[in-house]
Image (cartoon, rainbow, N blue to C red; front, side, top):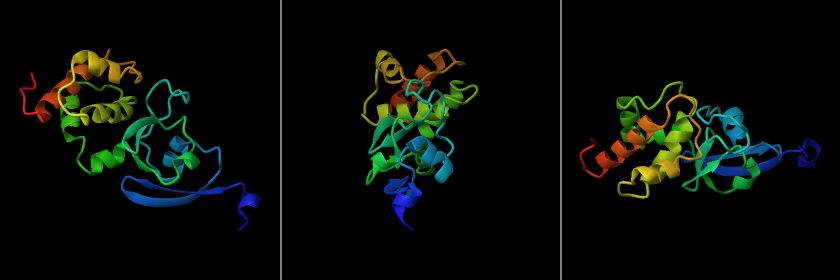
Length: 166
């Protein structure tokens, strides 16, 4: 099949630890690619302008707004979604803390919030509340008022560092 005739281009990347190769339209965003091609629907689409944080994924370990990145731009890179983090047990402490502190309500922002919180905690140590607030400042949550989310992230960090979760 002639790629020029179809308008599709090849993209190869690693998603949640597995190699993926597909033909995609050049204007397909990473968010749409993950959701439609790979059926990884924890990557939510909210504003589609990079403002709400619902579409956050890890790209080579760094949180990125997948609605602002074209799938072809991630050629050869590693993407990890919420599904991948859950599958390898990386979010167990955060999930437990979010549940214990009622840090989620409607759940729409939760995947992006967890991805961002995970990246923050991967830096090590226990971030202060101001640092947590700064880290999640690009994640919109219309339900919780953020206090419970900050509490949960702080508690998960403390628990991961062997401290009293308070």
